[in-house]
Amino acid sequence: MAATFSLTAAATADTGPSDPGMPAMSQAAQALGGKASERLTERWTRQYLDALERQDLAALGDRMRADVTVTQPITFSGNQEPDAVFEGKEAVTGYLTGLFGMMETIDFVDEQITVAAGGGSSFVQANGDFTTREGDAYRNVYVLHFTFDRHGSVVAVNEYANPLTYCQTFPEAAVC
Image 1 (tube, helix red, strand yellow):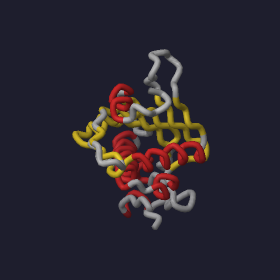
Image 2 (spheres, rainbow, N blue to C red; image 1 turned 30 degrees about the horizontal axis):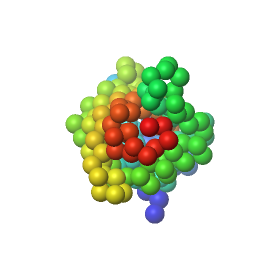
Image 3 (tube, rainbow, N blue to C red; image 1 turned 180 degrees about the vertical axis):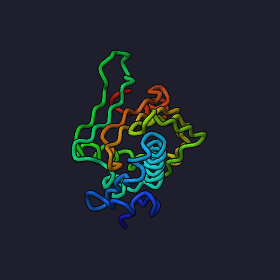
Image 4 (cartoon, helix red, strand yellow; image 1 turned 120 degrees about the vertical axis):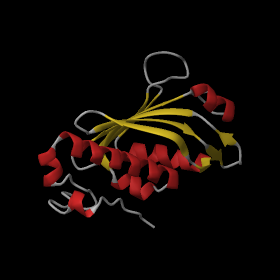
């Protein structure tokens, strides 16, 4: 079952999607500039997080550009080169498939979404209240930085999380 993201009629009525399944910023929002763009970016961020929590790979894929990247800048070794960079929709989808295979539930709590001035980029600070497939609690702390194109498609995500929490929950992981 493929879920789709929907913006309110006001957000899509003027221009409609530029690409099938991709909501475009309305002419009204473009004319208003900053604040309207910021509201759309906040909405796109919330929709992406909701799809992560539902583990809805189809909806997430619909919201990614073909050249999307996901980077995990905090490393297990402490160096400055990211241990994980997923480039392209296929690689990012593979990463998400692996994540969903590990987690029974995904729930972001205590979320704070901050949108950069003018929209197009957002930061999320949240606590993870996840449950592994084995039924164990997985509670990490997250900062996510999203970059969107003008159609609401994800261009890039930087995922900051505590690698120690990961290794305590998954000590058998190769990176631990």
